Image 1: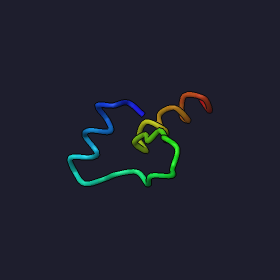
Image 2 (image 1 turned 90 degrees about the vertical axis):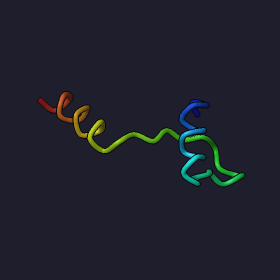
Image 3 (image 1 turned 60 degrees about the vertical axis):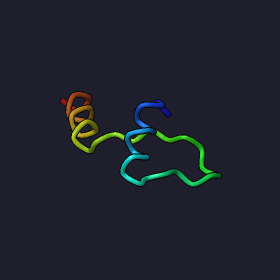
Length: 40
């Protein structure tokens, strides 16, 4: 996970579980845009 992103989430009280691997979190709008580009 990008360290600056982890710090940002930590400031708002979000913390990953100790035993969870790092994951990528994307805004739904980014996923929607990517899907639209692959379908059209």
